[in-house]
Amino acid sequence: MRTVFLFVTLFIAVPFILLSQERNDVGIIAGVTYYMGDYNPGTQFYKPSPAVGAIFRRNFNDLYSLRVTTIMGWVKGEHDPNRNFLPGDTPPFSQRVIGLDGVAEIGFIRFNTLHDKRRSFTPYVVLGAGIAYINQKIIITIPVGIGLKYSPVNRWALGLEWRFYKTSYDGIDGYINTSSPPRSLIHNNDWFSMAGFFATYRIFKQSALCPAYR
Image 1 (cartoon, rainbow, N blue to C red):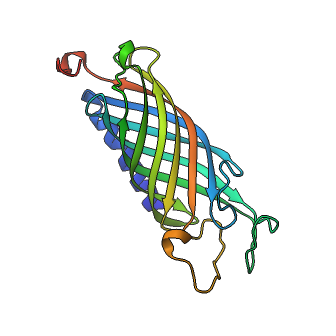
Image 2 (cartoon, rainbow, N blue to C red):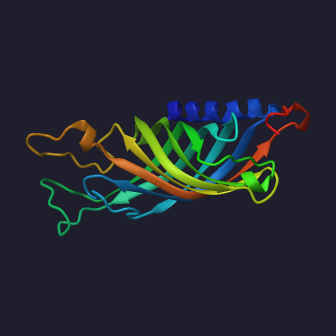
Image 3 (cartoon, rainbow, N blue to C red):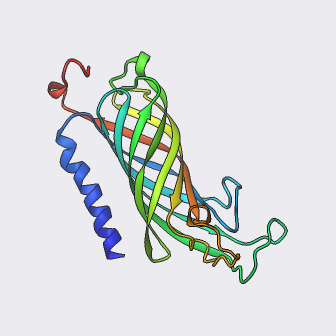
């Protein structure tokens, strides 16, 4: 747990060190997290639980950004034998999830919070890598997602994002797969997802912005 706390502290501290520079956004995200795995092979928003997080975004131009995101939420589930058969013990579970990731954010339309109506809305995609602390283990994750963001007033962006986290771990639900032969790790590992609303604020020095970025 101390290792997770160190990682989170470092990734939160770095953005604040960079806040003296232009092109930086900070904000929060709130929504729900849920699980997909042996108990839930494909139902979206299965047993959703509250989740919150923090965002730091470095904007390179009006289309491309890099982001660091931390989240904390819960995932839970129980086996329903009427939906799918699983051999062995299938107890219900509830796990806390603490996630930390870095992603590339790619917009489809030029976007800028310097409140230009022609650049105030865009859909986007994210893809990257991260870690998560689940069931007293630190695991590798691959986050991928889609989102929409809109700038209603100068410097502010509001949006909606839906992320899927492919994990390197098959123990989120605590169920040990007993199929013979066992399935591959690629298809057998569990997922978790987060969907939520976010708000970010762009901090910049007006004098530091170059004419090309204005």
